[in-house]
Amino acid sequence: MDIPVSLVSISVLVPGALMAAAALLGCWGRSPTAAVWRNFPVLSWAALAVALISVLLGSGGSLLPGVLMATPLGLIVALLVQLLGTVIGGFSARYLQGEAGQRRYVAALAAVLAAVHLLLLADHWLVLIAAWAFVGVALQHLLCFYPDRVFARLAAHKKRIADRVADGLLLVAAALAWMEVGSGSLSALWAHLGSSAISPTLQWSAVLLVVAVVLRTALLPVHGWLIQVMEAPTPVSALLHAGVVNLGGFVLIRFAPLLEQADLARTLLLGFGLITAVLAGMVMLTRISIKVRLAWSTVAQMGFMLLECALGLYTLAALHLIGHSLYKAHAFLSASGVVRDTRLQALHGPQKPMVFSLAVAPAVTIAAVLLVLNLSGNATWPWWWSAILGLAWAPMLWIPATGSTPRVRAIQVLSGLLMVGGLTAVAVVAHAIPMGIADAPHHTLGQVALMGMLVLYVGLAVLQVQPHRLSRWRRWSYAGFYVDEAYTRLALRLWPAWWTPANAPRSTRN
Image 1 (cartoon, rainbow, N blue to C red):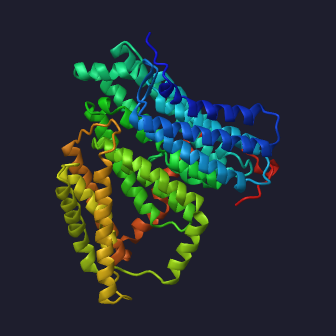
Image 2: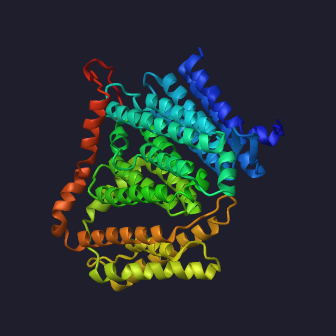
Image 3: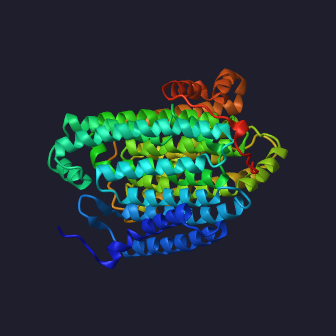
């Protein structure tokens, strides 16, 4: 067996190894808590530096044939994960000052990062399944860091059930693919799909993979744990929303060669993604709590990301993953500032937009996206995706009906157009990043997705102009459509659990 041993290839393994060392020091080291916090940033910054070197040197390729492989996207995401982990670790050291159990926290945080690094390198079904399972196991200790917070423990329990079901589905999917290909190697699976048409066995393997990703990524109807886990420490929320839930998108992009030929799996993924994006987006508008609204935003964004994967727009899904991770990390770690900004905005009172702007804004934003796309000279994505982007960005051109002069309105429209053009240009330029991804747009599913996003936009417009017409829908939206209540009852019936918060030590953080 020819195993590359160059320094560049070995460097890809170093970040995960350093985080594993940090986890071991947190678990079994005898140094005091302050020393553990000093050790973690040293190892974390070293891991970040090595991850950056790996990306700059482009160390893609097989590290251990059929077992570990560094892909360009995997290296970029590894750098992103380590950056977020380093920042979250520094924030946690200040946030948890004076709390008990900090050694346990450091060990669990480092273990999550180490497991994620391993998942990003996985080139074998069993390695991927084991790494993803260990991410969930280590994360449980962070979610339940405050033992007296019952909702967090309930959320962790529901997540544990979803994770174990997902593990079982992935094992069955792996077994089906292994029987068909004769190997558990993902590279062997890609080679098999490249030389022959997909078989019914691999079709079902893809379906099981999609369902497992839905369970892991907190899409409806198993989204509730992601909302209730807001009782966990704020840096844990940042790690969860900015890193862990995004892994489902990375796995789907990794399995793009399988999804491209599995129409049933892509249709199923489109259904889950579209329904989640639409419903979670509606629920988010009814929330007042900043952290809860951010949580519902994550659910909607995960639905949108998986929708992109279903449509074969893997490059956009990868860019969405990176952008969402950075945004959510910043949003959670600066939640206090968001609260202040929201209160300041609330002082001005709600402003209804002009009906004319609600009707015209989509046409203008779609035209702006198409114009930038034509000026670039590249058909970066299909026309229907330009229409979806235009609908998503149309609220930037909504003009308040009162409280502003014509000059101010003109400036608002111009600013909105510049924002739409700038975002489109960034997306076009970002497609030139060598991530080793090949898109495979599915035009029929794309038009279905466009109709779904149009329904969402019309609903938002009606809510702005005549909210009383959708009063019953608003009540259902505020209740999350009662989906989580049904899943909670089912989860506790399948795996009963009891907690005694009265006897647990109290936390000092809110």
